[in-house]
Image 1 (cartoon, helix red, strand yellow):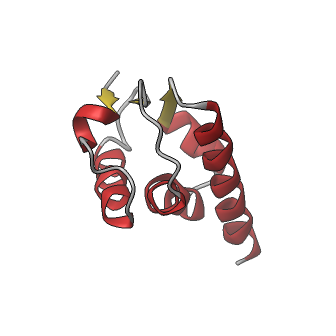
Image 2 (tube, rainbow, N blue to C red):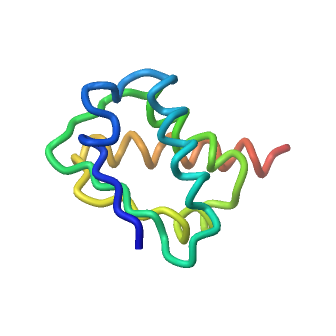
Length: 99
């Protein structure tokens, strides 16, 4: 199982759409792995709609949430970031189903 420590992968770059796009690219590179990619947000507070939307939100717009949840595991995330991420993924999933 691949494990990605976000603080090392992104460094201080974890707030913009460009940063989120880089993370999305990494997730997509592991999409067909047998085991889910673990995104470890230890000791980080993201609080960026742009970052979460560009990284995992766009994946939720492209794939069913159940598939996304099977491919990516998010751990050690700040509770407020978790709430923000869940809201974004839910919103993007609704857009996908409506189209």
